[in-house]
Image: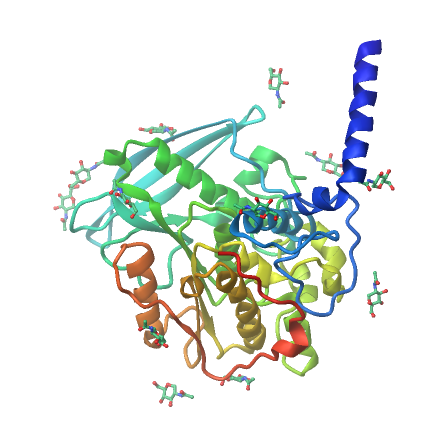
Length: 413
Ligand SMILES: *[C@@H]1O[C@H](CO)[C@@H](O)[C@H](O)[C@H]1NC(C)=O
Ligand SMILES: *[C@@H]1O[C@H](CO)[C@@H](O)[C@H](O)[C@H]1NC(C)=O
Ligand SMILES: *[C@@H]1O[C@H](CO)[C@@H](O)[C@H](O)[C@H]1NC(C)=O
Ligand SMILES: *[C@@H]1O[C@H](CO)[C@@H](O)[C@H](O)[C@H]1NC(C)=O
Ligand SMILES: *[C@@H]1O[C@H](CO)[C@@H](O)[C@H](O)[C@H]1NC(C)=O
Ligand SMILES: *[C@@H]1O[C@H](CO)[C@@H](O)[C@H](O)[C@H]1NC(C)=O
Ligand SMILES: *[C@@H]1O[C@H](CO)[C@@H](O)[C@H](O)[C@H]1NC(C)=O
Ligand SMILES: *[C@@H]1O[C@H](CO)[C@@H](O)[C@H](O)[C@H]1NC(C)=O
Ligand SMILES: *[C@@H]1O[C@H](CO)[C@@H](O)[C@H](O)[C@H]1NC(C)=O
Ligand SMILES: *[C@@H]1O[C@H](CO)[C@@H](O)[C@H](O)[C@H]1NC(C)=O
Ligand SMILES: *[C@@H]1O[C@H](CO)[C@@H](O)[C@H](O)[C@H]1NC(C)=O
Ligand SMILES: *[C@@H]1O[C@H](CO)[C@@H](O)[C@H](O)[C@H]1NC(C)=O
């Protein structure tokens, strides 16, 4: 007993020495939330490149990787809730069922997944639609519910019923769904975090099956969803590095818009969705976020330019629509302008695209945006060469950088 106490004391002395002597270095190299982080009012968009808690500015790509992890930890702590790591065990298979509806025969292929963690087990399924021509393994796009963008005929689609994982009817949906059957109704994970966890399990499942059975190339995966499911697609792309291309569609506030910019857009007289509204509407965010959502978003050590930035250096195409003021279109344009600076810093600006038009229904994909969508699929899921993916366009929005950005963009490559 004595020796254990002695060892603990020695450890404490050693670590306090280390923290004192090398405190600056110690803080800046933490890839997680700094201990005793002091939150302060920041009316501008926070610097994606400077470690929280008095750390230094990132100066190379490996430091960005660490800062990226810190941003993910901060987002989990203050906005999205805890994302559990890989579960203890997972098994999967693919089953086929035939059904006839109105005289037409349909075949459905289901990827069935069983997960066990902390002595509890859940099962869920996602449907797989393989291309009907050519030979696998194919690239695949994972969609929440179903895609509302056209998926090329040589790319598979995997549809996840995300509401089955975490319900999103309204504010009373908190803690309901298979994720919470596994991790408990009091798990801090918000619905969007629970869905992202399920997407990671889909990828685990595909990786665990023989390639002749899954017929999916897991190094060529896309992620999409529209509206509320677009907000979720962005979160999944941010937290799951095995997703190569993230396509949030009309995700608006809570997605590719920034909280601070949406508050300013509302203050300028537009009726947009803001954090204070969103936390009462549904369970997309953690209960911890309630503390910030009521016009205290200036205290957040991040904003959604940094959520999107977590995807870098992987690829992202954000699709937006100016026809719906509620989506907070000025905020989306400004937020994604700020986000793209992370890709600029890494020397891969053309892996981040933004396309915003109007004059079409919510989640109805516009033919105007087809060229950029095709370019992103071709380059990042079909490995075509010589494809130009440089796109950053809006019909009419603007962004005052001097008002919102007070940091510089380092060269990390
Ligand atoms: C954090 O705060 C606690 C309580 O005030 C204090 O005991 C601890 O030493 C602090 N840790 C660091 C690393 O500053
Ligand atoms: C942040 O600013 C608001 C509005 O100016 C103020 O009410 C609040 O006390 C400030 N919070 C902190 C932690 O400084
Ligand atoms: C990145 O920068 C850090 C801090 O300056 C340094 O310790 C590290 O060796 C650098 N890493 C690479 C791969 O250059
Ligand atoms: C695999 O398929 C069978 C039906 O053929 C099913 O009963 C079983 O639960 C499935 N296993 C997994 C891991 O989903
Ligand atoms: C579904 O229908 C196809 C084509 O008729 C057939 O080959 C397959 O065996 C059927 N599968 C099941 C599970 O009934
Ligand atoms: C649908 O499948 C059934 C067998 O399950 C078959 O008898 C029928 O001809 C099929 N219908 C069409 C339109 O292919
Ligand atoms: C799982 O069950 C075993 C056997 O009942 C028990 O020893 C263990 O503590 C449980 N683990 C968890 C995480 O609850
Ligand atoms: C969840 O938290 C509440 C409030 O702390 C508690 O009363 C309840 O027992 C908890 N439920 C579970 C399943 O842990
Ligand atoms: C999967 O895609 C990667 C990246 O494009 C490629 O290198 C690899 O050969 C593909 N694997 C198979 C089995 O087709
Ligand atoms: C841009 O166009 C949309 C749709 O026509 C309109 O609702 C919005 O207010 C415009 N934005 C600005 C900044 O003028
Ligand atoms: C919207 O689309 C309709 C039909 O394509 C067209 O007539 C109209 O001019 C368009 N309006 C704007 C503002 O682009
Ligand atoms: C790619 O497209 C962008 C936007 O249309 C254009 O500005 C740029 O010059 C093109 N780059 C190349 C290498 O063709």
